[in-house]
Length: 124
Image 1 (cartoon, helix red, strand yellow):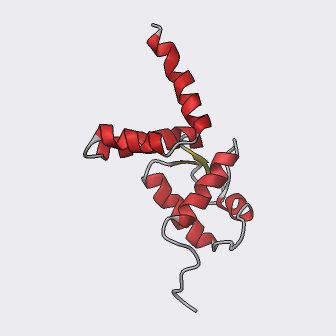
Image 2 (cartoon, one colour):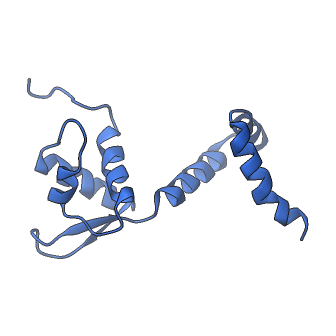
């Protein structure tokens, strides 16, 4: 049926970013399209998503000619996640409460990792 969504909002962009983060090279839209799992988006739909991601600063475009245009993620997946967490914290009304709730949802291994990352700072 025309107009029926095959993905939730943001899911296509998320899948595109996952593909770009997994690759350490410039990819054409056709390359990205070939790497999709499940429902493969139309080329024009994929180009629209890549254009939007470029405008958001999440994707870097390389090349002038449409046939030679390649894409890569502007930042690694880890850098992106870090920025998203910092942005969410900055937007929180109560920074301390947000941090405490976040920490309360972490697994024991994650808490230990944070302790180890913070420990060197304390000894300085």
